[in-house]
Amino acid sequence: MLERIRIVLIGTSHPGNIGGVARAMHNMGLADLALVAPRCEIITQDSISRASGADHLLHQASVHATLEEAVTDCTLAVGASARSRTLPWPMLTPREVADRLPGECQTPDSRVALVFGREDSGLTNAELQRCHAHVHIPTNADFSSLNLAAAVQVLAYECRMAWLSQQGAAPVPDANDELALVTHEELERYFEHLERTLITIEFHDPAQPRQLMARLRRLYLRARPEKMEMNILRGILSATEKAAGK
Ligand code: SAH
Image 1 (cartoon, rainbow, N blue to C red):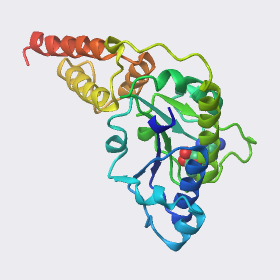
Image 2 (cartoon, helix red, strand yellow):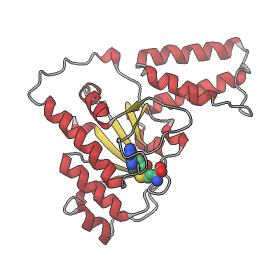
Image 3 (cartoon, helix red, strand yellow):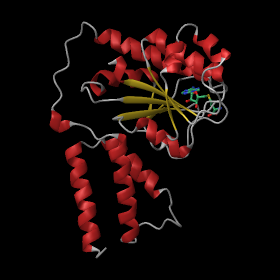
Image 4 (cartoon, helix red, strand yellow):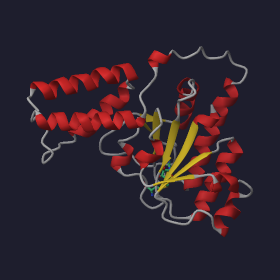
């Protein structure tokens, strides 16, 4: 289960924090670290010293230009946010995220991304809207922002606790292949197709978006479509385009 969990850091600006994250991950048995457009070097004296012996995670970290690239193969993405946002999204505590992990990580292809933001400005709304759910670490309301590595530590600890309680528990039954969930990439292709079709049939005016696509994203992400259902949805869009003569 732990090997199916990826920690994704977006736009990190302090090497020491990346090192601190590597240490937090290795302490809890996580190893998959992905960096999206880091704003600093990854291997520095600071990062190596803060990693305190977990620097192999720094060397094997993957580096990506965009969030989408880092989570292409993920079946569940959860964005960690210190603040609440304008369009409310399904909100979980770290423990609720962890409780879902044994079920989410059943198949060998499943991948869960826990996504963390920039030290100065967190995650953008667009980044958060690419996630199925958001996780907020309960804090003092007047002082809610944890250090990046500390935030990763809290989530990584909850992942380990969920994994530990799964050891010795009855094994989860084999997942049915037909119920395979879509990956992030398949969903993003669907959202592009959906937006194109809605523009074609003049339901959606990109000049007056009124958060339509964000609201639809929230709906589909909440539904967790399976591959079979996604084929049906794509088929409906193609038939709609055809009927509209495009
Ligand atoms: N100043 C930023 C927060 C930066 S902290 C802001 O106001 O948004 C860096 C990252 O750590 C955040 O983007 C988030 O992913 C994580 N983080 C910090 N505190 C958190 C909290 N209370 N709950 C969930 N994630 C948190």
